[in-house]
Length: 195
Image (tube, rainbow, N blue to C red; front, side, top):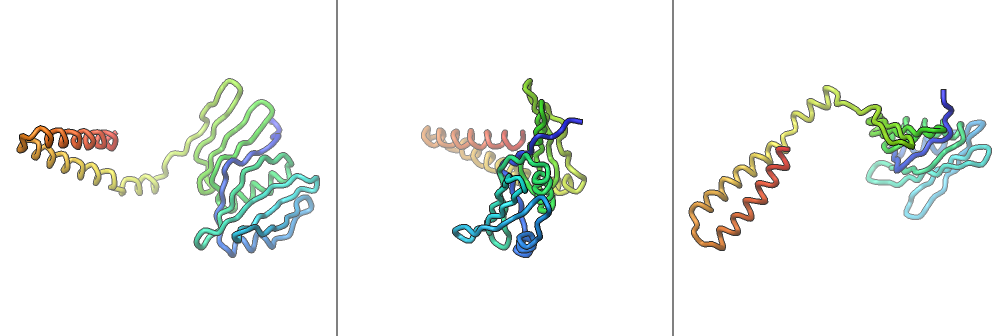
């Protein structure tokens, strides 16, 4: 099996409550990983995970409403630090791209709310899609219940009928041109929604 050289987190975010953040900040370090907290301007906090050899990962937390959003963009090469960051990412249901870097290949994982949504294999020759999330029965049911697109289609059709009635009644060239422009815009939007 190929040995992983590094992991790269690209625009990754994690979400946690104030209690969860306090719990995280007050956990003990391990034999290989220590951490410290920096307080930044505007009340933001930065968690710095440091491996015994000196490699560091900086995770910035910003308060938004009642939750803290942690943002992370970094490359991690130390196996102990990789494991610590990976556990944080999964525990707090991370969202973002995680690249697992091997000698001749990079595996790109896209996570949403802690779940893998897409996996791609990246080689010098190109990219190949390995896995893409299919909707679960519950997700399909909620999508089916959403009627926003159908409602908008119904309203646009009513608007088109109203505009056609106006166009058939009016004989003034300026009004007909204006109605034709509105009809073209409505027809284009209807085409987009039905596609």
